[in-house]
Length: 257
Length: 257
Image 1: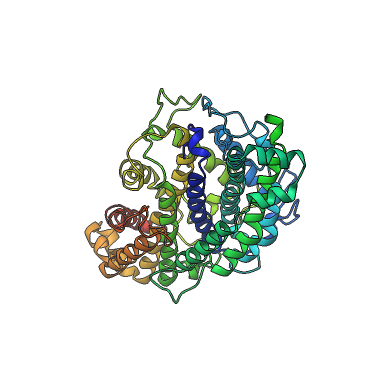
Image 2 (image 1 turned 90 degrees about the horizontal axis):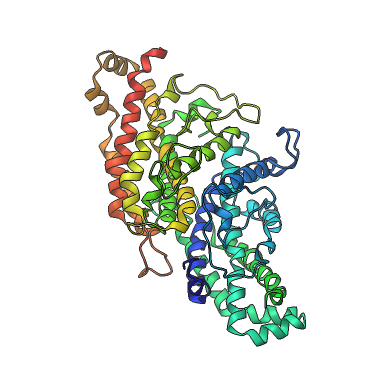
């Protein structure tokens, strides 16, 4: 997949290859997160135990916002597959812009589910992937750093739904135009859902969690990630959120016809 | 290992467990890097094709420096196991300091091999782990982001030699004091080297590269990392650099007796 060549980006086979690669990335980040406890204080806004001067938000918010500010200067959010958590705070790149050919509709950056992704990550995912429920004061920095990586990989995976949606739209314009005009949300959901593909994803995740989740030189050792909760995270959170992105993107698609 | 409890930090068993965990981290980062070509322009100082306003250094330097500036504000470099690449640029934490009990000698932050690590990473490691030799202009930001993670994991692993050195010093003060006084560098090298342990590390890496390096659901597919070069990177670069850290740290150890 090459974002400078639109045809490669809207090829469903390439999209799937990219999603497979992202599975590995997400699992590796979860494994890194698994060494630490949940650390709820990292996520509390304006916590008196962790007061951040001149900032409204959590410790994670502070770190994520500053990380995005730096990343935006090196053009991270010019790339159509990156979606900021703090779109109001991103800065002008210090480098000349890359003129990406348009692949997605112009409103695409407004389809941004990052607040929901962050909420789901904090309230559900961290409880599944952390070592235990509890604080670890001296690791807040490490935890926030890994959380940023987890969130950004989840965000990229979930917002990749836009490319899936655009590819499906272009593959059957008359059908999608009709459903969009009729606001037939159920119809859109039915048409973007491929249960066989979903089952294959979950099956692949089971194997990957099995293999990557334990040190291969010490299989009796501590298991860092389990197939059960990895499959759950995808089945109940990642896949449904991806579909929400697809549907939201499609519902506005006629603005650009 | 708990940096608030010195005894746990200088326990060689705990140090080894931590080093094993870091192997996984390093492999996962290398795998992420393996999706991209070498991108030499990312590492060129003052490259006319990638001019960075008001900055002397490479694109990677710019990104790494700004990332360290943010990280320093959330106390990254207060932790005795983190070593900055730009020690002159780190900022004051926005949070109250953690009062880590002293485990290492007070000069320990001056034992900083990051310039050498960066040089070895750019000139040797990227050529082994990248997809191919070449540029990919639209991926410079992604490449720099992953390079930062690779460099920081390598730096943490290699500078962990300080804890190994301190543990060994404390375990046999008379021997080490004598060798240090006599500037017996060969003797120090001999005493910090445990060939059986090194062989075990390399054997573990072979297995991990074998297992992690290929998609377990598609073993005939593209191999992202090979045992041969992972073992080479450790044998020729990581382990020797770790020993250099140990020796440099030990040679000054009597300053604090």
